[in-house]
Length: 313
Image (tube, rainbow, N blue to C red; front, side):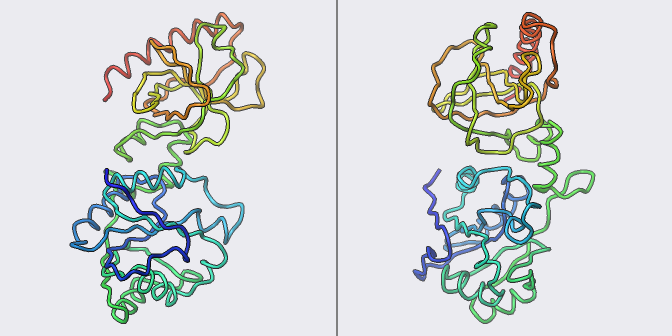
């Protein structure tokens, strides 16, 4: 994967005269629909630098506080996935009051023309931009005629049932624990990552030591439950059983935890950053009559998870 150049904020735009092929969007999830946009951008870029303009938060976080959906990816995860898809430059704009007040004319002038020397802009059919969403594809084309860039429109990617592949769809599926369905929409497993910390260490007592991610977790957590997962550390993938949620067997009903038991290997991961790939939902969280009953269920879970991971790429 080639290194990607990243610009944060309006003041960081290169303004260097290099011609760029640009697409604009939240790109939360970098799902199949997003990657079709990137693929089309790469095919039309020619010698121009393939560039994505995205935002550090959902617009509702500024315009309608309290109503913004939880992001599927952190900014870092999103940038890495965009780079892996072939993008050469990512521009992350804080969707703050300054940006939301920018008119569509000023956006085209300041960002597309002067900041990025844009030669072509690729947008979706429902694209809106500028203060109050007043800018449309028609206004963008008019501004492109003035500033010297052309506008292309990409069609939505739909599932067999005709529903558009969207970040909203993926959030809904993750909230239901349907990570295997999400895999088909992402063409990869949904991941979270974070630093391993100290948990209650009850898994160690039960014979199932776990790596616990407790704070500053990147990526949207799916529904509570037990999952077949893979834990990735320093480029190596380990099969794992992961539980997410409170632990009613021990009376822990207030603190949601994410714990992964790496099968067949014992590693000291405290303080290390790991990525967890969610492969398949196994069961919901439940209260067991005793720690021994919980340990017996964990053994059954592990057997099921081994079979699942052995048959999935």
